[in-house]
Length: 212
Image (cartoon, one colour):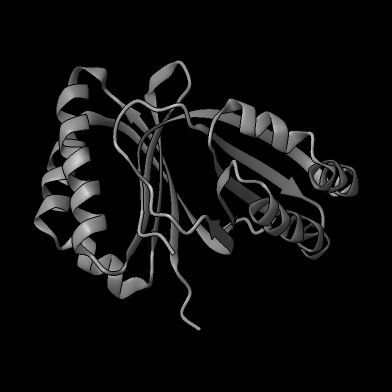
């Protein structure tokens, strides 16, 4: 089975270029999701309170789909601006462990009340952790209306490093999720497996998916 291309970008933005960067980024994401069959999801976020700290998540069906994307004129236009606007760039290539979302396509391109989280977890035992966290994520998606999207991937270069990108309908939906029995069971069950954990609150600026 072909593995999707799943990448996390941590970017430093020179705010002097913010308007140009936002404009060309909007065109790139909306054109990509509409015109490229293999571009499955693209999310541009920034760390809450820090517009200069950009966090981008992208999913492509396979390498062919990614190559189609980078050959597109809208991406080339974005790359030209980004080469001037970005002062730092970290790319984390992930092995997708699970990619879950509600069937409705996301088309979020302006201010919204969504609650977005990025978690980075370093674990002691990948298999034991996986056996607990992946069923919990499936349950969350199935029974919680306010859980819109949950992605999990492992860093290809550091396989004990897991990243979770999650979107909730609003802050109340996130708070409700944290109070569920399945989430509390996950926290308790993985307590001895987690070496480090970092959770960032993100502001979703442009969030688009194919849906289904």
